[in-house]
Image (cartoon, rainbow, N blue to C red; front, side):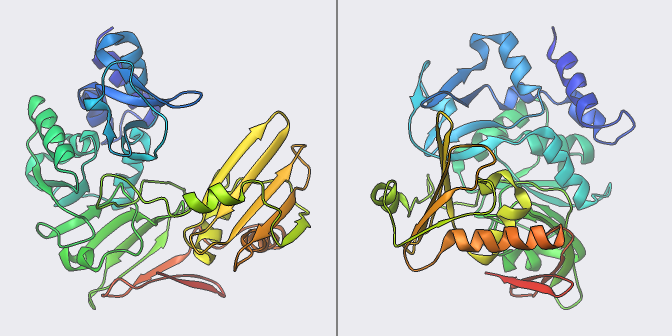
Length: 377
């Protein structure tokens, strides 16, 4: 089966035929941008080589799913056949096409908009070039190899956007009507506001949360907008080959520790990243919690870890059982989670989605809804 048949099926899964994004999805060969990727196995990340199994390759790349292309410093393009990676977090990927289109829709891109996007594999850049033409698109990434590889693959299908190796948290290469970032930031860089034209719009996600921010530049050089109702998560910006893991030493020390506080919870055991609203509210209250989980038969365990030495371990045997919670360190992380769940139980909702966004010219960001507000550092 030709790749175009798969691409048309993908387009039909993601948008309606009359959508302006249907043709870009139906005519862009995603397999060109993802010849290899990492798939999560039982104990490790395992290399998938597309040309070795063409049918599996087409099914994978033309599904509406994210494909991880790099774990820590290990890019799939450079791995030997049969390679595995046992430790590390994803540091680059091809985002699921439906989410790429969602971000572009939130940007409200006009036919003459000059748009800055993040590169990754280059597939999202290709979709935008199909929609606008290449002269209006600038694609940036902090990784020189990603910019070179994506540029070569874009060239191979006749697309030639402006491309640059650039740290998106610093000065940007030009002025734009739209900035769409498929890496998460916190806070929004002031350089984005400087690069946006008056009335221009930025779209991004806040690191550590599932929150999509849309904001339009105001006359004072800041921006106003809102948190969109649909959740999304992207990898954080980085300046090195891999992300730091500041809680690894703490993790080794406390996996089975008793702690100095032992309580029980009234709620069933929750792994916060499985509940976007709870996860986001918790991270706004206590930024940079590291969430981990494990299961042994019916026993489930969730850990919350923080670089300041705070930790919590919650264990439950039944799916609906309230866990026993051990906590230690200077802060009670599980208590912070319980406060979020108490609010959700009391009010039936949480104020993060639909919250108003105000970004000062220096990048200071405030979220508010009703009586609730928080400044995001």
